[in-house]
Length: 418
Image 1 (cartoon, one colour):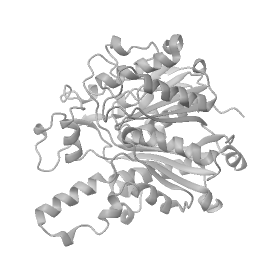
Image 2 (image 1 turned 90 degrees about the horizontal axis):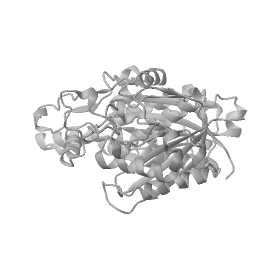
Image 3 (image 1 turned 120 degrees about the vertical axis):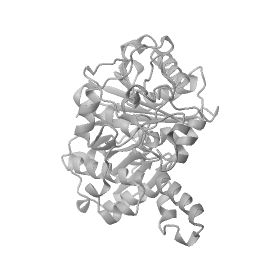
Image 4 (image 1 turned 120 degrees about the horizontal axis):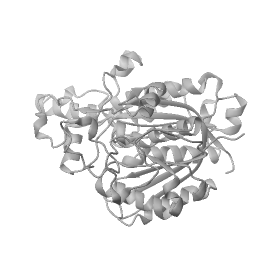
């Protein structure tokens, strides 16, 4: 249980860039990846209350993947493969030199293969020809399709798991990868989160839930605005993030570059409500406290929090309330930001993308801005939230991720010290 676990590779597909370099430059500059949604075939977009989303524009899977392979898998799995490919290259990890049974894959996914799922069910009812359903339909839409495809693509034969806890899925994937390495089940875990659910039915479902922003359809870039008084719901996004986690002895043996250390993790359930968090913030605070305890870190040591901050009225205020409960007087001295302000809420990918922001923050000392933070809401104001990029040495970072089903996760990252 004393094994230290480090991050040696990163990869990303996001609405503000494909590839870590492009993503981080855009994030530090405060670019928005939110745009007017593309048409859903014959469906009139005017029928949707929300008409904006964080879309990965001009994504051509054939540019990154074998065309035959790309054709057979769902968009979310394409994203996962592309992000993983970059992360492995970034880590300099050569699978042919590894014991494949010591390399695991853990992926977080909230919805799974919804692009193919919706397409095939629509075609079935239109054509009335069940024998024409795509032969790969079942293995493609299952939630574990991305983890299986990633493992097969790279010959990883260790533990292969999919975590599906809605919006906290890939934060749990990072935490479970930490546990997997700590307990000696693997030396390396390819950890990822992916979702691509900007589809007619899923989007309509979130609209019906009245969870999405509706007040900025004519100004998409302004729609995602965590902690701001004018926030009116989250903006859906899509994408994938991947991190290579290794035991420190394994990383040292191959002289790997190290971004930082994954030091602690906590998973809890509020057992309260499928969508709404407890308004007193007590359970969210408990989750953060448990993660800090697991990492052996005191609240006074935390420098930066990558907040869940989806841009909903209740969620943002509850998270800030919880931060104040845990960090007390120090709460206003911690840098806090919301990656979702730029990329939207990428559902199952959100925790992985936030983890990447934490890893890059540890390495560079830079914290990207929270854009659209124009009029701070008194109900969720912290002095460390800024519409500008911030720079300061970061020794401890905390990631928050909360999902439908009353599900909470928190992950602690440390600056690597030899």
